[in-house]
Image (cartoon, helix red, strand yellow):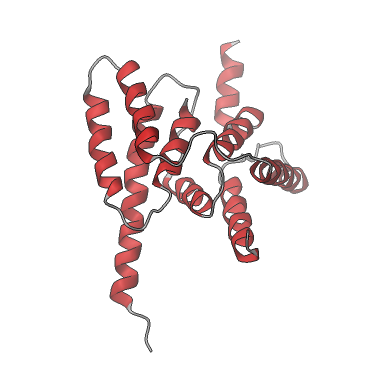
Length: 111
Length: 85
């Protein structure tokens, strides 16, 4: 992994954690900063040591996982139909290259 | 050579559309009965896109966010929990 990619990852990770790790009313600055530093160290280590995803880069497989869940967990097929529409719009988007990984991320985050 | 503004603007517009689509998909998924406030906002989502587009493992990133949420619940979620007991 190139240095600049590593720097981009570190920067995006720090920005994400600043917007994810809460600050509590009773915190002083030092406590809040320490919590963020600890969270960054944990996240960086977890990301670095992550093995290759067990699921191969197959965008259709990731989409199937989501569709099946939406059908299973909802009485009406409305959400699954809405997802199919969003999915075809996503496929036509040129700027996102890791489409399968983003779908798999959303699936993993909410499963 | 002046930067090609129209092309940059198109790219930014396309990036915004991707985030909108992903945010709608996340909203569909989070509507399921899940713990408080697991919905990523657009800003958080755009940083996740950046991380994954740069090769970060999607499952590892999801697990990091879930772990941090479990370890550091949102302040209002924490208070709700206390009121119920």
